[in-house]
Length: 479
Ligand SMILES: Cc1cc2nc3c(=O)[nH]c(=O)nc-3n(C[C@H](O)[C@H](O)[C@H](O)COP(=O)(O)O)c2cc1C
Image 1: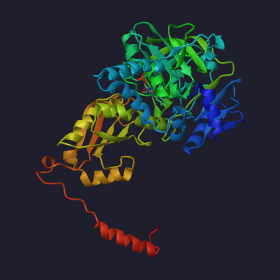
Image 2: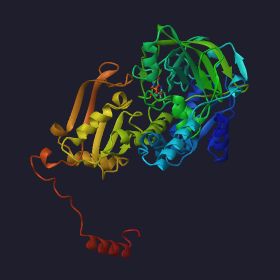
Image 3: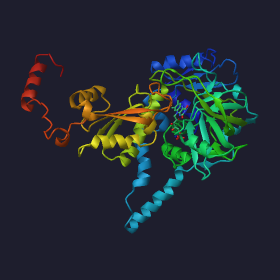
Image 4: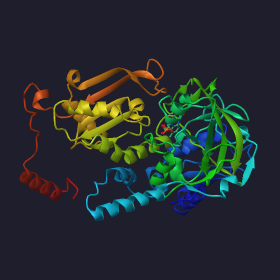
């Protein structure tokens, strides 16, 4: 497990997956464009050594621009293992014998290793100073963006019950001590802001161990504490330290932490911002972050991402969510076999699920379940359900199932008046629109006018084998 961003960068360097950019470039338009040029080519992670207007700062980018680097960051070849680590903690069989009880006790004690660990001395406190958000090399990503944005800060807050939220929200810098936080209404942080009075303590952490960084954008179900969740994902508790000016624990190994509070009585116009739909989101009214203190390393490495037409870094983050959350989704909707959130489907906008179908109307039951779960309720606009023998990761198999098995009148569901992604370009009103479900499963007699689904054609196995051998001998088909 990597302790911080630097250890991860060293590992990327060892693997030949990191390139240094020595030419001086600006975080306004130039570095974002360089990141896009490399990311669209599925290129390496980048370390910008000279940042125009920000002497002493470096910028890391495109760290998570391939699934291979995400797996490296999370220390696993199989991302589902991380989700299974979480479901394993919930679904252990009831301990009935003495041996089982002892084992369950051991597992409960084992949970402790995922808890955040408080440390006294923290690299992020090497420099503690008056905050100046304009000193950060935050990006202006697109020419018509409203200004500079912290595009990958972990916003850390805590509920009155002591539960930590960590979320990645774009943050528009509007002054040395002020910024606007774009937390959408259904997000944990927004829920907290809406239920609190005054200015809620908050901290924005930039850079840190890569598993914590990735946990920030994951849809951690409430009330699971997000430091604990990050510990489960990284296999070891996150090191945290007391804040300097806020009553919050902040990541000890981050590169930068800006402490302050979020004032919901001070709503400001945020945006426009070129977002992951590939258009300028006009933005809206969002609460103001008011900075109180700045913590950073002596030689800080800023990390920023850019969004735009897919597939950029966030497309692979969306795929990581798909794999890590599949075991949890299966626990809640056990008939689900596999799930695909296509790279070009805007993070989680399009989802394809295969199911073990047992009864008429089953696909629609699964649609309703998925649209009721976590962020799929807003982000997932189009949902296609197929049978378990369809490989959801092969779009042509899915199109074949849609073409062969769908009767639009019977199998297409449109849910009107649904909550949708506020960024959705297609919806009539921001945050309020409709959903499309397609049941592309084979139909049971009850769904098919009492008829049996026709038998699918298959060649005679023995003939097929013999003919294939003949074609190979003739050199027409490769062996
Ligand atoms: C690059 C990137 C940018 C994001 N920007 C925003 C944003 O501006 N607003 C928002 O509500 N969610 C944004 N998200 C999604 C949230 O990070 C994600 O839904 C997270 O789970 C929210 O945290 P929560 O668990 O506190 O609800 C972004 C995700 C990524 C990967």
